Image (cartoon, rainbow, N blue to C red; front, side):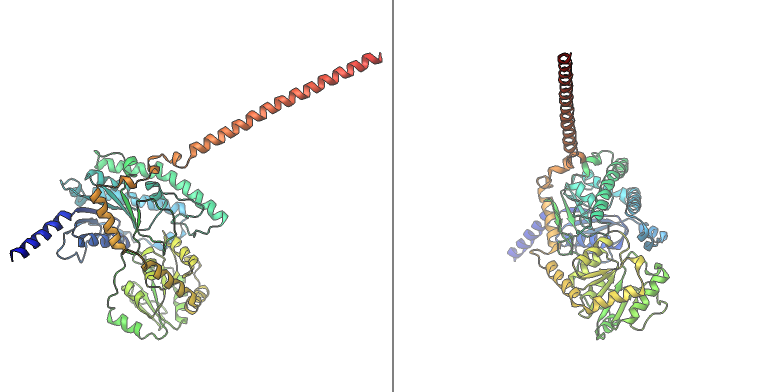
Length: 524
């Protein structure tokens, strides 16, 4: 009995010794972002860590018997709903206008996060943390929390690699084959697409360095005046966890502190609601699942696009599960069933699911590939266009730009995807690639967070490129030197040759005059 008691105490002491206090900051009021943050937070809590989660949401089902605390940014969700923005209109914005809009919105969100009383109570407390994890979403001022709490900084990207991440950690991002995330290009770009990609990256970098970072630095210094400048903190992340993987993302260069954990949020298959299950089980020709994600409000869709979709779906023999935010839709065909909410992952896992009609969001793309279901994509904004372009390139999907949706185009795309086996075959192949890993994604994330904590940071993984100013990193000073040296050399050679030619011409003219003079003398 004493031996058992001793073992229990020893195990408890060992567990407490390995327990760390971790702060996670996911302030953006978007369900898809929170799903990723809460999955990571709960996964770390399950490993015995003391978790503090800052978000616009509150965890409805916090881990039982674990140390998990929510700091809720109250009012953020209500404000987002009050704005009632029609996200379909974002499709009309060009990449520059969209980037400016997004950076401005995220800057304001960061300002309000710092000013929120619940957040103020946190930063003014005497709490200590062993690591600070911040979601990367144009909120660089929040990186200062790591210095404030004297803890290593861990970044998390909900959208995978991007230009701004590459700049922050010194990762190479050649514009020749790596399109920026909000452009609708795949890696196989035409000449003019490469021109556009290069010019966008240059302008975006200049805006980021000279407008965005200084604005965030002012916010950070206002609330955390004692910490270093953002020009230092922004490049000081120990690691960055990326919601990406080569099975569904473009293979690109990775510096050592970039960790791919894409797919970590995918959950085991659960039971479907009885009405959904009966509808799907009875579909002898299969089911088409249609959802535009958690952020887009389907009823904001223009009437002509809605009518085209309704008519095209009514022509297919498959049953359709449509996530729609109202009880009915004008002209609803008999094969379509509407639901305000659907368990997406469980539907995609059902053997009768033949096709997923989607907006091309990254989480939806990951989930559909995990279960090997092809997609028909109507991308609207953000990374959706790049994800959709990748799906077409990899052969498991077709994309119809939202403004180009017509009944005829949609009918043809549905016929192609539902009748040709190659799309499902390619989706199943990607599913095998996604599942074939030496370590599960969430376990990999937990390992690296604990690795950073064990070693108090990872300066040995940090590449030297982050210490270089942008003009040195891009070798612009070297290129300028070579250009000036070349121009100087060419100019020198030109001047010398010109002088030599002039002398030669002058010499010939002198000789000619002397010859003519001799001839004249001889004649006389």
